Image (cartoon, rainbow, N blue to C red; front, side, top):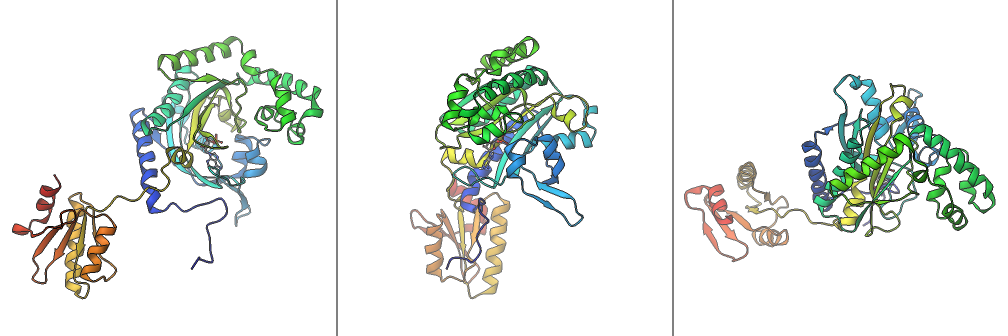
Length: 417
Ligand code: AMP
């Protein structure tokens, strides 16, 4: 019978059969982060709403429409974190980390929340892994950061991946460019979608992201910031590109690339995968040299990215993997409490020796236990005799023999080697 309760719209349960693929993604990321000196950070799942309003930007879709915001019992406005960068910058400042050797490198993984319209690859609670390097304006930091995500995708074997690269220039250059873009958009206002028209003055860059036909037509002739880069910005971007080329990381320049968060400056990037549908981005990020200052700290350049774990799994086609089969199933006489105790103790002993072992907990008959061992794919079944003796059955050959000398672990290891 279907349960009366269901997971809330846009959320899902991570069931045991898909958690192995998740663990593989997390383990690959952990290894890459640790080897590159990115230390783990975990911030709360919720923060003061203002952190995101100031950090992510009041004109963004995230802040305007997608935050899970509520008042707590103390009357504070609280928001379930929609992204990880602003909280990490908050923590960086709160713990005085500007006094440490710079940059400070962080890695994270956890759930994030956005009230979006759910579809394949887009959820209201999703999981991201990410990396931030705070306190360096060097193009080396950009290349290092992009390289980490490229390495993760390669190590996991994600197929059909493409890296798109762009630059938004420094905050001042961006401002000048935005004035030019606004003027351009105002000149063709009539052809733009209502949403884009309403936001010309608050967030004109989003026009590049629109799928409205009229808007797309206008944007084909729009000035792009990549063409306008000059001085230090142009040099910075050229150096990031040269470093990626030297490292053998393939990319294409996308002059229309924009991101849904306001804080980006200079380098931005996006890894897309042709195996995903409309939500084709696996991960992306960029430089955010003005964010820490925006949050009340000293000017502090920084760069980072986040990748969606669900998108990675979709791209890998690994959502429904089965759990690892236990190597050993321990059958016992369900009517005997003593046999149950021995079976549990044996399972403990095998697990401590690094073997996967499972005990019947369903009171099955001897025959039922063998059937179950077969169903779950056990290689070996331990049979507890009434006299306390142990037998071992090889499920493939069907042969069953007593365990000589009673050393079960040694006997199993001998057979499995
Ligand atoms: P963002 O924080 O918007 O830059 O997104 C970074 C990555 O998080 C994206 O490339 C996606 O892989 C993932 N992501 C963002 N929003 C969602 C969502 N609603 N559902 C699933 N994954 C998401």
